[in-house]
Image 1 (cartoon, rainbow, N blue to C red):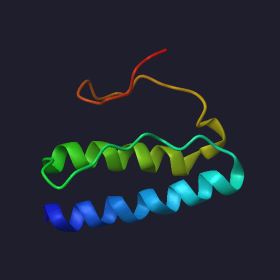
Image 2 (tube, rainbow, N blue to C red):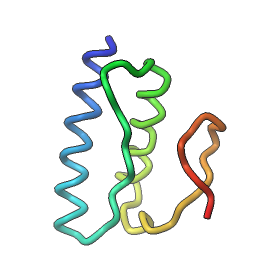
Image 3 (cartoon, helix red, strand yellow):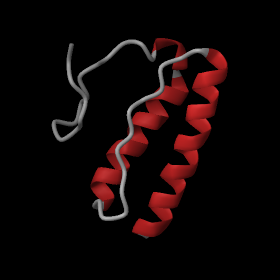
Image 4 (cartoon, rainbow, N blue to C red):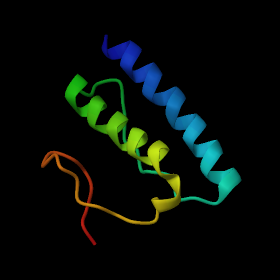
Length: 74
């Protein structure tokens, strides 16, 4: 399951990177590797999902609801 989740996040991340370049939006910072737990990968997938909901607001940095998240409040 972790390998499938890794492939899914990697594919979505490549698409988000291309989309953000075409539309001059800031892409989310996604840190994934094959050794991450499923929970950590789901946190990264959540970042991508939030970006895809409203990419126009990508310049804003919000503190995540999840305390284990890598988001930094500015």
